Length: 110
Image (cartoon, rainbow, N blue to C red; front, side, top):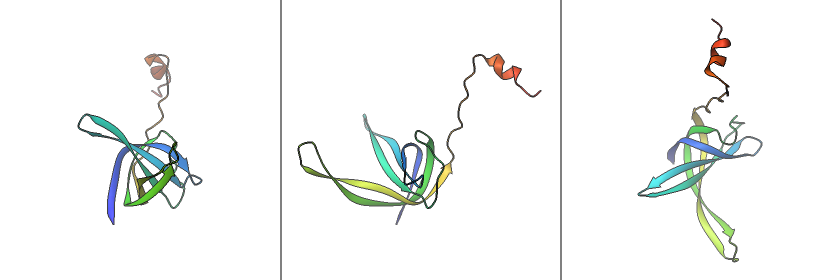
């Protein structure tokens, strides 16, 4: 089994009652930029929300998926799944907007 680490991926979707997510990674090859999506399966709720960024490592496997396009043609794509994931980097802290830098000093504990 192959091990994979996705660095600073964006959580595009949370599902399965918070036990799974779709992680989006932007890759560049030459002058072309494209998105790669990973389906990550946790054994319990992971605590991440949509648009959070996280570094996730786990066991990678591929599966062939099918869908029907707008012209009625059956299409196939390789789906990338991550099992036994570990969150290596927690989500970014929420930024709190302030009107002025002085607001921070006015509320300082010293």
